[in-house]
Amino acid sequence: MGEMVASLAAAALLATVATAAGTGLDPHTLLLHANWPLFERITEKIVASNARSILDIGTGLGQPAMLMAEIMTSANVTAVDIQAGLIQEAKSRATGMSNLHFRVSDSSDLSAFPADSFDVVTMSHVLMFVDDRGKSLSEMARVLRQDGIAFLSVWKSFPLLNLSVESFQTLPGASPEEQLSVNPLALMQDGAVEDLVKVSRGLLEVESSELLDYPMNLGTAGEACEAGMTLVGPLVRRLAHRGQKDAEQKFCSAFLELLAARGMKQAENGIFEVPGCAAQLLVIRKLTAASKHLEL
Image 1 (cartoon, rainbow, N blue to C red):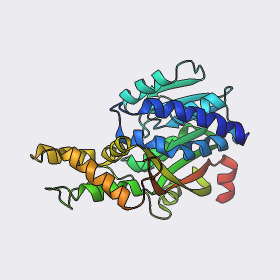
Image 2: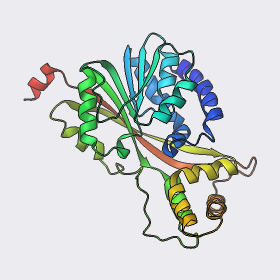
Image 3: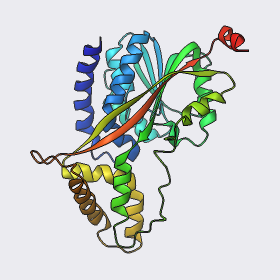
C-alpha cells in the first residue's frame, strides 16, 4: 500500500507543480507544494485508517485532499478553505473527481457540517495562521465522529523564511523592525500544539507525534525567487511604495546570492534546494464517552 501511495503521489505532484506557478493566489499555499513529503505521509496514515469520510481544513489549492480522493476512491473527501479564490482554483484542478467536494468555510466555524460527520480531519500547515486556535480545535472535535482521528501539521523549522527575511533586510531602506503580518513558525516551540489540545475540555488527545525532515526544492532561479517573494513579498512591495526602485529585482538578486553562498545551488543543474525543513505531524484522537469517563 505504501508503494501505491508513493507512486500516485509522485504523479499528482507533477501535475500540481506544473500548474501552481504564477497563479497569483495565497503565497503560503503556493509554498505547500514544496512540502509534498508531508502530504504523502498524511495520506499513507489515512489509507491505513480505512476512513470513509474525510474533511481537509485549509485545503488551499486542494492538497492533500486531491491526493486522498485519488487514492481512496471509496471515501468521500470534503475540502474547505476560507478563501473563495483558492476553492475555485482547487475545483478547476480536481475535474473528474466525483468523491471530492469543495466549499468555502472557516476553520473556526464549521457550522455547515453536523456534529460527528467525519472519520478523519486533516489540517496541514494551517493552525499557525488561525486567529482563534482553540475555537478551530473545538470545531474540529465537534465534526469528528467518536474515536475519530485528526492529522495536524505545523512547521518546526522553516529555513526558507529565515533566508527570505535575511535577504530582505539587506535591501536599501529596509528596517529590521519590519515584521510579516503572519508567522509560519508561530507554533514552533516544543509542546505548542500539545498545550492547545490539552485545553480542549477533554475532547481531544494527542495519540502520537513525529517530525518529518526534508529539503525544499525551489527549482530554477526564477522559481526560487518567486518562493522567496511569496514569504516577504508584502515587505518588498512596501519598500517599492516608499520609493525604492526595483525593490523586487534587488530582493531576488540578494536572495539568490545568499542561497548560492550557503551552498544551496546545485552546480550540475542550477537548481536551488533549501535543506532543514521540519514539520511536526500529530495524530489527535477524539475521545469517546467511555474513555473520557475512565480519565475522570
